[in-house]
Length: 350
Image 1 (cartoon, rainbow, N blue to C red):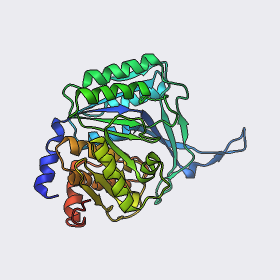
Image 2 (image 1 turned 180 degrees about the vertical axis):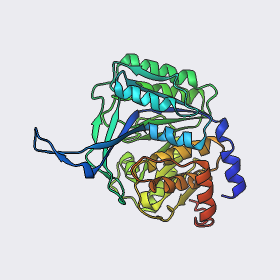
Image 3 (image 1 turned 90 degrees about the vertical axis):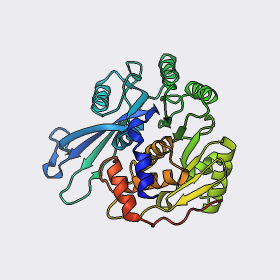
Image 4 (image 1 turned 180 degrees about the horizontal axis):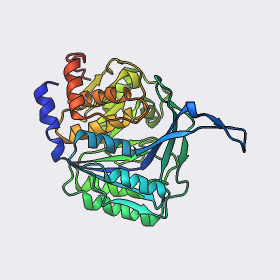
């Protein structure tokens, strides 16, 4: 990608209007000072003294953070939180972010706020060391009344959107935002608005999703196909191409340290290796950065390979941000893409 194309694509970002439909959670970080270690008089167990608490949107909120960093003009989260302290904290985080519109972010006593609480030991001169995470989740089905409010939000937002991201983050089916009822509503949206770009990602499976742009990793693709992992690169390319043609939508596959692969419904297949590591890394949030950048780039008119280059660069930037689920902004992306120059090989086509 040359400088002109980079600036043409990213210059459209402030005019984009994107919806993010999925499971937002609160990422709460507890920074522990090991120099203040104590033993509890009552239990005799070690005490971790928390020197600092910080919070940010997580899960689908990590995608949102990346869209904000890219300068997307309007970001409409369609999600819910509980009527609890964590929900208050999450809403406060979201309200502070430019471009984020909370008209369809539901706060309800019928749900608890999905929370990842991450204790980090902060030792001088060392990367943060994460201890066992403390999670708060919903284990019962999302009430029908909440589902209906989410579906109404999706329908009301469709006119005027440049793109939509569908992010299913929960482990237990039917307990989050992306339920079977919501997927049926998305299927109706696809029928009514076939040109609306919608990219979908799920930590469980994209089986049963409407024909959308799918983003998954290599193991998820193997599971989707009912194949035994690992699949070789040639087989991944073949299967991604077949799926893209079948869906009539692009398919993107993340390949961990081997980079990214994209297939178009017209039969083109592009693959890019990841960029070299430049020091210690933390891979948390890299996949969400890829999703955000693919969505922004495709909604902004990027070609398949251009979207891959932007997403690959974003992942490289994010993995070098330690102790947090990081983001990549347009300035960082431009500098890295200019720096790597011709590192990526010529396009590979099926």
